[in-house]
Length: 329
Image (cartoon, rainbow, N blue to C red):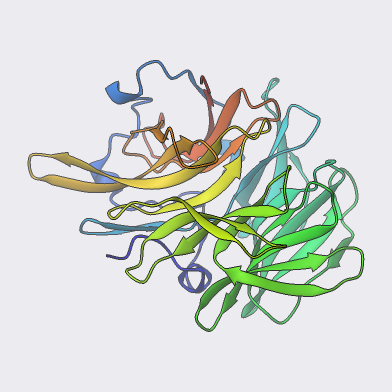
């Protein structure tokens, strides 16, 4: 059973779109929430004019594939959220104040940005961009100017994430046998290869990452790897589900991620993507969303009180928007 969209497939396809969705005719996107989500405080943050990008999702029968890289990131030390927007046949990063919910401001002026993240101090922005047959990682100021420094080349690199001490950028590199976790040392410019996997999320209290890793049967699990000792351990695995896009809460007590589920009714078997959380050791696994819309690219607010994600819910035409839910332990 193939339940994830490989990096190679994502590159070959139109991986990000503000309007494309599969099986849209079968879903009533105007519904904001479903009974299983009772108690969730959901707020729509953006509007159609923001042209928020939705990571690509593909369905075939009971199987589902999705692009797992992040298209949202909170700007550290602020109430602002950066998001990927599709405008004028380009994808660029825009920033919006989550409290005022006014107009967005454009942060990059590129053509094909795929995903991104901020440095822990909020001063720098790291992003991957499609350039011909490759994807490169760049670094630029998070607040002003468009001058960019290219830090990887001649490969297919995605999902940059800076360590809490600001010394290394971990990222995913597409390789012959799948995807691998690499790092770029910002102090000496050295590149290092660590393990197979994707979507690296550095931890604050130890030299370790939470990553998504593929299994031989095509599922994806969450693993923790110590990049100094090489010790690896499985965090979340399920024989019928895939899990991707892990991100640790600001207090380190929760892991937020995307997983798939199967919505069933008489004559209906609809594979879906939803938002999940668990403890760092994989316990207390909870499914937060159940809507038939594609809930993807979840991130924590800087204070950990909210979760932001991209979804077509609450819009009759199925237009993707940024949504916020209040997180309660």
